[in-house]
Picture 1: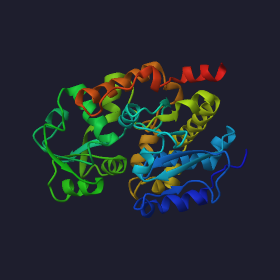
Picture 2 (picture 1 turned 135 degrees about the vertical axis):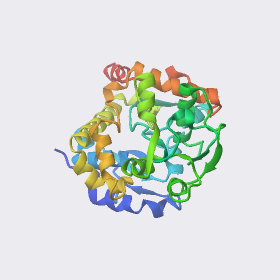
Picture 3 (picture 1 turned 60 degrees about the vertical axis):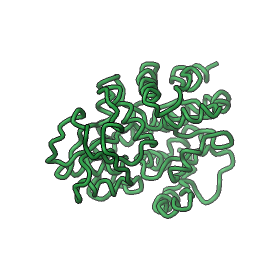
Picture 4 (picture 1 turned 180 degrees about the vertical axis):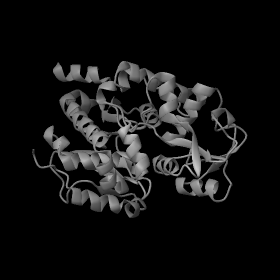
Length: 345
């Protein structure tokens, strides 16, 4: 096995310091102290569970085995979102709402593979009278921001499945995720809350305090056959057309990281979970998600059928006005079979 380009020591130091770095818009680099000439860079947002994939995967040498000098970084959300527009990184992760916005601005970006699924959930207090999604009307609803991927995805899915706009139906309380949790559990000022990954894991791990009434990955899979993908792999179109083999190598490394986490969930979460925002005492919830395969989809599942399920979500976003227009599908997303055909041409 070739020595990985990313050292565990460097990543540990960087991920531990990302909280301070994010306040000034900097990123904690997952790589070593020196840039690797010709390396492929990617940003992932702080506190995201995919940090475990990137850390464990680089530590095990999965991308190095594919011949890719891969240099992912942990970044504050604002820097992560802006990594791919013209002049930025060649490869990244991108939410559908941001893809739509950048396409409107003339950016040529293409989604080409699955990454983390949308596990973010809506919770209520364990003793609440709210029993299901239909009860999420005329209440005090807390959320971390409707313009986020979590906000736009959840609003669109509930609109598509249940026929009402959860944003318009309720009193609106916007706050950061940890404050929302306390507003509901400690202060009784919120009747239900939509949460990011970290607090979703907290909620799943503390079933004596809260319970989910809407799990995106279960609800959308039941509706369409596939869960929503919160941040699919994305690339500049010019780069992807010139480097389909490298794109496949990136996905192969990611696939190996997925398999490694599913088969070694307990050891991976215990070793790397804290760096991915998993608090002490909440590891069991993430281990269960990983062992059940709920954190991600196999690369081979990135088919036209899966794309159908995702574009239905994007179309619901347009119906609600969350995005101005649906990006032309044939220009901005490619199945795994099409990518393989490009590489073989």
